[in-house]
Amino acid sequence: YDNRSRSLAAARTAERIAEATERLLATGPVASVTLQAIAHGAGVTAQTVLRHMGSRDGCLDSVRKRVAARVEAERGHSPPGDVDAALAGLLAHYEADGRLVLNLLSQEASDAFARDAIEQGRAYHRAWVVTCFGADLASSDRRPAVDALVAATDLTVWKLLRLDLGRSAPETAAVVARLVR
Image (tube, rainbow, N blue to C red; front, top):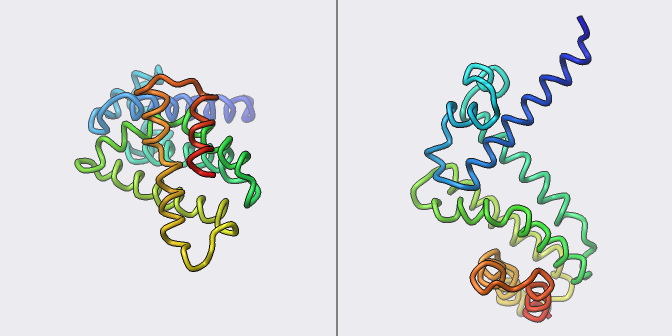
């Protein structure tokens, strides 16, 4: 009996379950993210999913935490006023998680999980704009300027450029930088 290897195996199983849940959330309706679908995607039984995550909501919560940690790693460390660093982190986040967020965005009117995730994302994005660019904004015009930067750096701008118009990542970065500046 080796407790360490057992703990590692359990952690790997929990990771596979979280990855399977995230894949399902990125590609289909939230309603189709069932325990059985998660289990199938992770190569385990539904009982194993329950043992590791407690419930379907536990699986969804694990994805929320994973994505939030990635967003913070990609976007949370650019120094205020460093436009290039801020946009690099933002666009890295969109490249990694943009399709997932777009899928949730398409369901925000009909699904509580999607709505909550999108509302949290919007609040994070606005706070990020204020943190990254706030010092450069005149206090008298702050709200309209923040609104303009929120719009210029919105996921839908990335979607338009990258997915709809087929622009490369560098081309997209150049356009977003132009909008921000």
